[in-house]
Image (cartoon, rainbow over all chains, first blue to last red; front, side, top):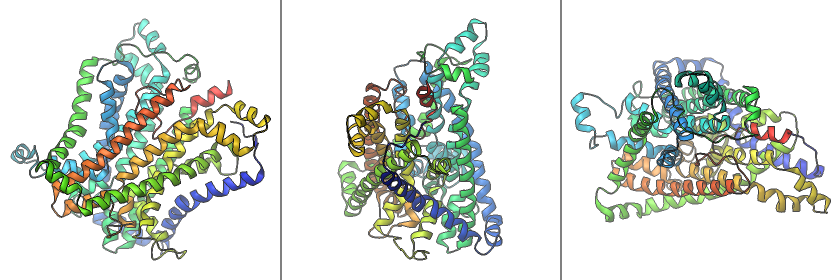
Amino acid sequence: MNSRANSSPTSRWGLRVLGLGYIAVLLVAPLILLFYKTFEKGLAPPWEAITSADGLHALKLTLITVAIAVPLNTVFGVICSLLLVRHRWRGNWLIDAVINLPFAISPVVIGLCLFLLYGKNGWFEPGLAEAGIKVLFSVPGMVLACIFVSVPFVVRETVPVLQEIGTEQEQAAETLGASGWQTFWRITLPSIRWGVAYGVVLCTARVLGEFGAVSIVSGHITGETQTLPLFVEQQYQNFNLPGAFGAAVLLALLALVVLTAMNLLKRKEAA
Amino acid sequence: MEAHAAQAPVAPPRARQLRLPGVGAGLGRGVVVLYLSVIVLLPIAALANQAFSEGLAHFWSQVTSPAAKSSLELILACSLIVVAINAFFGTVVAWLLVRDNFPGKSLVNAIIDLPFALPTIVASLILIELWGNKSPIGIDIALSRTAIVVALCFVTLPFVVRAVQPLLIEMDRDMEEAAASLGAGGFTVFRRIIFPNLLPGLAAGVALAFARALGEYGSVLIFAGGTKNTTVASILIGQQIEQGNETGAAAISVVLLAMALVVLVLITLIQRWGSRHERAQGAGAGGLGLAVTAPPAPQEDDERE
């Protein structure tokens, strides 16, 4: 990229003030204020909030949802991308459309969908009740919500990379006698790994922070079905601001880790 | 691997037959279809079933009730305002990131994605701290319609920037220089040369931002809340679920979903159109390719060559 300035200094500075000012006011200022407010009275109040029994449980549950939803969507994402890019099939456009659906649906609506499917009049209710499995207002429902909202990410990031790398190396490997699995592990996966990793990072961020869908299916049982985002909201509604800020800062720090990972991976992809 | 990446754009090879190892394509397809059915399609079917469970007339009465109508109108109006604001500022920011040089540019580039990474409820919390009744700068817009717009601007900012940025990187500077040498002023060059080239990306980014804004929940919840004037569709759905009116909630959801789907179809059409017009790459599996990210790597390679 070369940046010859062919515009006048006035317009250049005008654009800088506009663009950077917008980002400063909209993104940076609130973030700085969050950290300032949280640590205003020292480290102790937010630390106590996060290490309270409910806080720790929320953290644990958040990590559980990530540990289930992200690997599932990653494996699904890679298989699905391979199918979409490397196998022509009449139904591919439909699969592609369905994968994009979660982007178009409000998180609350996703929550409501699951609420209706697994709720008291839902289609699965008789079978589930008999088996003694509780989906709604318990962890399985929340995990399902997290999987639903984060389905598209790995596929979306892997498909373009797969298209770009082409099939030459894979064909060469096959000509040399490699089996399908060998080709996949030694050629395909190493070439798409940064794209997949980028998708995994986005997927993790979404699951970590998912609020609307999880909120509807969780039933808001403190210490039982609360993830960190739900914990933030409940603490805020109960006017326990140190608690809300403590958990919010923890989530914001995780978000900054995610941002850093995104930027590192972008550079890897570009290399 | 590096060598490979450099080769790829030169000769884009066409995808061919079987590349799914071990399991055959048929089995893989079965797994994918089953997974999507259980995770995505079945829940949506349950929603549609509930929305129309008491007949079309009941569905219609739920959707056209004063509360439902005003909540849908409000979110439509706010989303339109928000995408207009972000179309402008998003293009300005993308321009700065591609064509300008200033200290801290890579940091600004990194922070653009913050709204993708930050949980929406945290966004709501920090916005109400800055712009609420305890505002350190004395501006209190919490629980107002302005708050809805600000919250939506926050969550949708990256969409436009990330959609416009790669097109700007890719753009051929010769055309601009030719126009300038023929006497066109800065604004004319932008209006006649640059803007038309950015249009496909801008449109896709705007459509994505719009779809996101329509359904946004967490960031609006605390900051704008569910007061009489600020109940947007997603908040109303939440309220109706709490009140036990599941059919009403499902009916509004169907309308909200239909609106977002229209936008989604538009994106796909725009992308097809965009890829037919001189952009050979990116056609692929359609959908939201321009969406969440757009790693500009290969384009940069092109430019160097």
